[in-house]
Image (cartoon, rainbow, N blue to C red; front, side, top):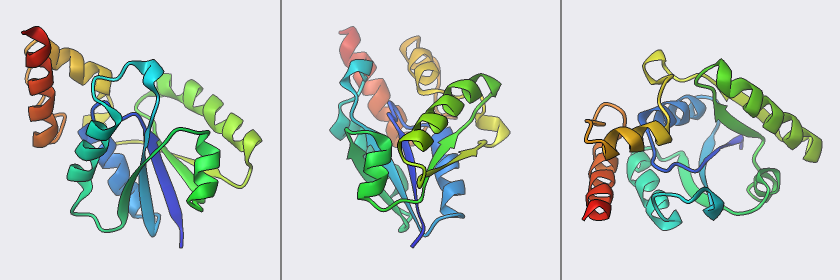
Length: 162
């Protein structure tokens, strides 16, 4: 079975993330969306909340599994017997950082490949950070995130402002 991992913080999940996951589904028998447990990033949503948001969004795709990890990505890939890590590249500015990560992961475990995928052009500018900023300033994020993510994000931001 060919297994690919789509790792990230998903804080929150965007339509760009979903686009890359759907593209990965065409290449792998199973795709694991691996939510990183990294509290140093000070996430807006807890790990469990992010897992729930992702699970809700991919529930209609039987070949997609949602999990979390708090170790080296290549070690996690070995644990789940994955062949590749799938990373989305939005723009040239992402490439240098992602390329360095891919080279380091290869040095740590050359069995695990990294595949870069570009999202649809309509999602190339999306980032979770940008989505949170737009929402925080009262902008409409409905075109950028699934409906359930938009609602949870708006609820979280309104609770913080009270």
